[in-house]
Image 1 (tube, rainbow, N blue to C red):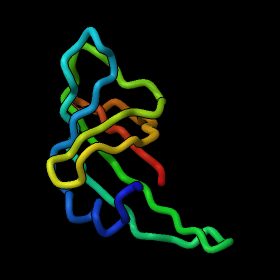
Image 2 (cartoon, rainbow, N blue to C red; image 1 turned 120 degrees about the horizontal axis):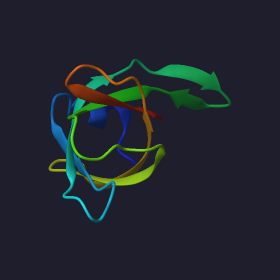
Image 3 (cartoon, rainbow, N blue to C red; image 1 turned 120 degrees about the vertical axis):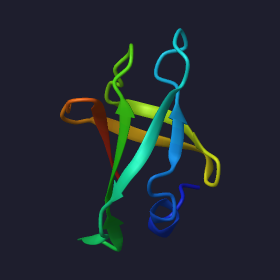
Image 4 (cartoon, rainbow, N blue to C red; image 1 turned 45 degrees about the vertical axis):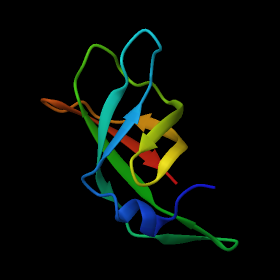
Amino acid sequence: MLPTHKDFKSQLNQKFTVVYDASFPPEILTLTCVSDVSSIGGGFDSYGMTFSAPLGKGYLQQKQRQMRNDVLGDLSLFLVPSVLESQNLPIRQQQ
């Protein structure tokens, strides 16, 4: 089961590892933002998360990714890359 909004908020500024290509070592992402929860109707809520990573040899494409965090353990998130900034590549995930 996916961790809750509260679980992710507790991991702000913490590291997550993700493998985007088996020929490269895992990328280390930092959870830099967890948005507020908003109701989208039908009993569902929505929130977004922003991860950032140093620009490396690879580029994370939009895709479901296996990730790992020391507290939350193994999880699978659909990552959507956003703008490329000077030294960091923010990765945005919608929940």
